[in-house]
Amino acid sequence: MHAIPQSWSHLHILVGVFPSFGLLIALCFFVGGIRTKNVGIQRTCLALIGLLALLSVPIYLSGDGSMAMLSKNPGFPKDLMSTHYQWGLATLAVLALAGLAAFFELWRSRSSVIDPLHLVLGLGVVALGLTFAADELGLAINHRELASTVDIPDVSTPALWPHAHLFLNHVPTAGFVFALFFFLVALLTNNEGMKRGSLVLFVICSIIGVPTYVTGTAAMWALTQPPVPGISKAVISAHRDMALWTLFGLGITGSAAWIELWRSRYFGRFSSLSLALVLLFAVVTLGIMTETGHRGGLINHPEIRTAADVLPTDPNAGITADVETQMNDKMWYLSWQVVHFFGFSLIFATVLAVSLRVLGFWKSPSFAAVHRLLPLGFLGVLMNVFSGMLMMLADSYRWVVNDYTFAPKIAFIPIGAIAVLYFSVSDRLWSVKAGESAPGAAKWVTVLVLLAWAGVIVCGRMLPYL
Image (cartoon, rainbow, N blue to C red; front, side, top):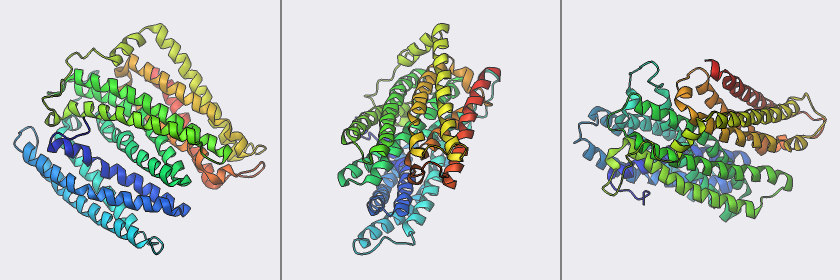
């Protein structure tokens, strides 16, 4: 199994990504638990921070073993490894302190309230900053494309794309693991707040899956135009095939999670059947992502390859290549372009209607009544993600070299989609009656939503002209 480490380097890559995103998610849930006074969420987060601290042991051992092995290879810069090692030690030390504080607070909270000064929260924030710094230094060791200064007109792609992909691809993978962790705890403890938070996290992971897939396609061109020694496009194509299945899995899981968030507002409770479906989709998607991550690691990490790994040799084989061929047919492309425009119309019409109510230009209905329009926008998002991916595959290089409109469009999509989640999770907004004004915070979020989706539309329309 690919989830079982085969070497020190393999183990280091597998476990090294979890502290950064695990801490980020645990701290966000912890703050949410503090604000809602949900002791169950707070205790779960303390336990998770403690468990993440225990990862310091395998991370240190695997890092030390990996460094000893890679130092014999002249292809790995020793100065970068040394710098990464020093920052890693500092990170693990602070992470261990945060874990000790979390376990102590978990033990102490059995007979008293959780520390109102939040020492764990402070140590966690410091550890989070250090983990991101150490991760960034670790990427520089084996990813030569990040330091490339080659810029060949009409050949090279911006270096930002592979860098963004290396950062983003850990959000739906590691993030999904922790979403599943919180979801299972929520089901076992019947914690309604944690159920809602887990469903939100599933939706966020699925949303981030879109720019992750797009930046992955862009990173392919950065690695192959001009070619990077030791990088095989056939291996990249195999990774892209699994990434496409991952995108579908994330979409299905995120869709099921959002539908349950929306439905539960009207019934005041979660459906056991819907939660079971989300769990099933999440487990299957996690299995697909495991294979996707392994294939991605084989691209630029020869140190984790084993004799059992049979690497592909045909760069034109696979589902993605077939889809690209089909989409180059003008009739197919135009058909999906029409679907894409209809999707944008649904999204912006829904966003505009809800925004007018929140901003106070349309106070006659309650927010609960306007909330019923959100599935139309949700349908538009599904139409646009599916059609947009197909259209991009028709000529992906043409889009990713466009720094002026394509990159901003891809950045605006997750901002707008995640901001819209506020409409489904805010209790204060849900309670706004007919004739009442929405909370001030809701108005600021609404302005962000309008600007983000307007940016998506404007950048999308300008793509053919810039």
